[in-house]
Image (tube, rainbow, N blue to C red):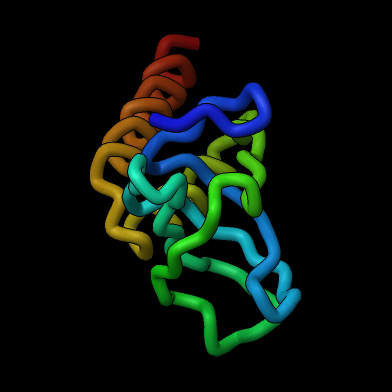
Amino acid sequence: MFSNNDTILRVGDWIKGKSRDGELFIGYIESLDILDDKVNATITSSDDESMVGKTIPMSTNGVKKLPNPKVKNKEQIQYLIDLALATGDEEWFLELSEKLNSMRELVKGV
């Protein structure tokens, strides 16, 4: 866990930033390097398509934490479940699956 501009960074957080060459990217924190004040980010989207899928080290000052998504409907949750599967994030997958199941139970009860 790091503090970055009054924001706490944790493994699994979604971030955005710029690479050394100036390409914009979005990704998630794979691991933290406390000694070097860096995060290792897996890139999911970038101006430079060759970066997508790679894990790169970034200074904590060079990234900004993205706000947690406010999921409002079943389709959004299903999309995020697909993303969790694609990124191999089991904890997030389980959390989203639980949300989806809760929504289904609410619909059954009506």
